[in-house]
Image (cartoon, one colour):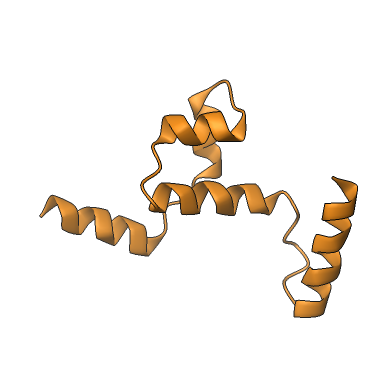
Length: 75
């Protein structure tokens, strides 16, 4: 874990990414992208190792593109 985190920090510094982005932010990105790819929230919950679905929901961030796509599907 610490080796991966160290590599992440080095790559982040090289690429000039915002310093406030932490290694843990990758879990948020994973959850958001998985939902955008129509992975069921229950499957996402399992893959993230959460026992409670509300924990998983804290990691999902609905993007404007995703909400627009979902809205179009309901038209």
